[in-house]
Image 1 (cartoon, helix red, strand yellow):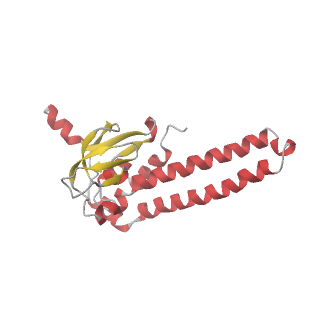
Image 2 (cartoon, rainbow, N blue to C red; image 1 turned 90 degrees about the horizontal axis):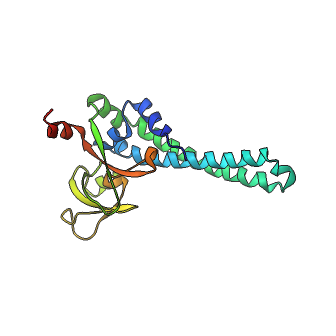
Length: 198
């Protein structure tokens, strides 16, 4: 597994903002970028592993000693994974090129943020991001407590009636690919300076 976030660095180079800074921006295209990056990372890793499997089969001469399916099977899988990669890359490109995202980024400085790592079972205060799903439910920008699980988050019942569960991305919970997929939430970095008296 790759431990360096090439996709995150690529988005930062293209936009001038980190994925964390995009997540905090009140523009859907920016807030959806961390999820798009996750999808692109996954598609890229899957494609890389399948290409490596084919390369290994060819180096080991499996195509000569075994059946032709030893080559054609991975080739078919590579074609399918290549399509998934193309879709994931196109989604990231659309969000990066979004006119509202670009205009907002040019008019507003990126927010200084810090990561606070969390675990499943923790209840944490989050600001719900401006993802499409949060905007459709009129939740974007609200401060609320969420109960973190390994795959989603349960919102504090004060927000609305009934049990409401959101995906990690829609609940403002992110995975750090450089630290084994550890979960984290974002907090303003200024709070840390204010607390220390700086």
